[in-house]
Image 1 (cartoon, one colour):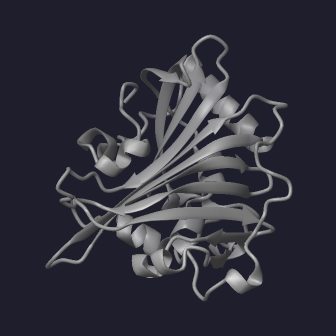
Image 2 (cartoon, one colour; image 1 turned 135 degrees about the vertical axis):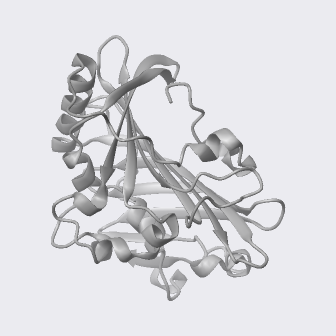
Length: 286
């Protein structure tokens, strides 16, 4: 895992290595006892107590249809202020194997996610009206009465990781630690929350979490959570899963000014159309 190729802009090529990154890792072996692993968890929980800025990457791969399956790959990246939930993302959604390429933008501010990701995969809509946006209330994807997203609760619940090898983050040496969390067992996440389409498509509530710490200082450099299918280049689904998702946060050093513009510019009311992007909103950590 430490040498695993993570998803990147080249994820649209859907290499076997990149897609395999969505497959949940084996469960962490019992309570964490390794000093480095313990330190990684301490750093994680410290960051959750005082979250800062990060570069956020979101990758999604989905296959729909049984007779003539169509697979799409989405890649978004940009700055995020995790403490406030503000994000500014740009990227592409493309049909695997040739087909429309849709330019995608998404911004979150004031408790709302605005996105040009086409509702229900209607790429024709996005191409004919590139300036039109949908809107999703971030409060609608919070589990139960939580003030945070499910990922916040899941990461707080993570209490065991194991060393998974050496890695590199932003040209710096890092050590990777991996663990798993079953969202169905996390206090504060009701069963009804896990019936959302995002989890039905992934066909799992088990989330793999990767923590990357600086090999010298031990500081937390990168955080990844991922779940869903592992697929081959021909988009063959594994089991009942038809989608895989991965979210990477490259953490900024403490005290670094937020890279998100202030205020975040949101679409004008005249540019909004009915609908929303529940899946994308559920992938955000806030």
